[in-house]
Length: 420
Image (cartoon, rainbow, N blue to C red; front, side, top):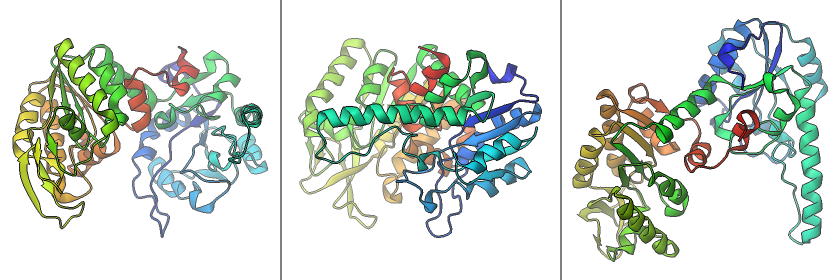
């Protein structure tokens, strides 16, 4: 597998899959968070710095056909600011403008193609009526696969080199993330700097973690995290569980949870996790106290109780002070920390204290010499909100992709270049 740092792009055109799926202001369509754009800069600068030219392709949102509100045009001024140069724009990734502009692209120039998801072939999912028979579904899927390959082939013709630097979509078998790689020889397809750094960080945690290794898993549902929890139980020394999924575990253990979130169909799954942790000698920690509210609102009345003694009509929305102290002690003694998911309803300030405390503890552990990997929207938001992004070892850009990789799944975008 070719490494981007060892490759010379001089005089060559590279087509690069980036992840510019950035949030936009609903009224002005101005980019409100440019983290993903900044994440692609190293790769872009390497290509044009070598004297190559760079064609960028990305998706934005989930458009149904061509929809102006999902245009990538708002990315242009941000990208131009960071690159300090003009960036060309083709208003249709498969249109005449894209073909002619790609062909005319000079060394040192950058071209951004319009949203690849304006074409349904990118995702490769046929739109079918509910009345479609199994035979019709099968035929439609086969036809769409052919179209997806055609899309990938057309885009591949724009350049000599393919670079995938969109880790956030690496778990999708889409035209520009996986299929397109087939149209480039092995020595002319590679990962960008961002994907390489993502894989290095995750492989360090999965394959060579310093001990003690602590995983902090938060979020709403056990069902969202069960695969990664199951995989981590074979690797970690400590597993901290917080967030809404806490109460499925507490219920499974016979506790009172009031109106707290609970997946009643996952009680057996929670019990199995508890049993596996015990059998593996993993120190599994659940919160011991929680901040309860009478409603899911910022102005809710609250009180603190033992985690397994929530009054009827009340719901747990954050961890309490005793739990914070318990979790902090474990995190600060760790040499490796993986954090995915909040400890409470992080978007409401009243219930963000637990998540903020974990963010600070992880940063402190990093300062003490631990390797710390952060992934998942709310965990990343907590790190950024507290100005701690440069105080932890690595902040992942890929929510779903990171989860699937940590679960042990093979990601199509990774396999397409690295192989099995």
